[in-house]
Image: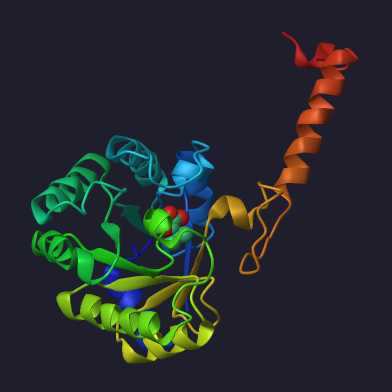
Length: 265
Ligand code: KIV
Ligand code: NA
């Protein structure tokens, strides 16, 4: 199998082919995601919500991200594996950012890191890039700043924030990021940013004109019944399937229908 590299991702944009990306946090599901042909697997700090049950992405630690990343890397044969630098592991200064990125690369074997923010984290991103670590940017609704935003509503609806986002995106391309995630921004802004950059944009809640799309795997699979923002398309109802399967199992045990003689030694 030909491995997906950051260069392959960029070629897809030049060829006009859309890029598919999904999150994964563990070995078993990462194997399925990789085998299904997804090009980019993000070990997102959304693991803080999805895997650990936290309300935000802020609590997850670098060690926990490395644990998830290590499991995913073991599973993946083809996809590009990108790992989120978690909150607090890169914003302080650029040496701290480099140290965190190096730990992720060394200890997990991942291929790239993702960092949230524009101008504020420019020096940190430059330092990580200078060590030869590919960086994916992330602009718009950056969940590590949720307490600054106060809500998960669409970002950059006003001209000043939209202008800053466009400038940040150009800056990220200029310093050497190979791609940038655009989260929950108006579709028209996504179009403008994607046309202004040669590096690919990966959208989530950012409309049809991003060069690629990403979703949280558990959301796409419909595991959480309550979470249904407009941007989310559910491709399965695993909530129903899993609940039914487990309920059926409980009934069978109670009714002494499982296990049978045939299922015994
Ligand atoms: O952590 C995450 O899942 C993400 C994507 C939604 C872009 O950052
Ligand atoms: Na994230």
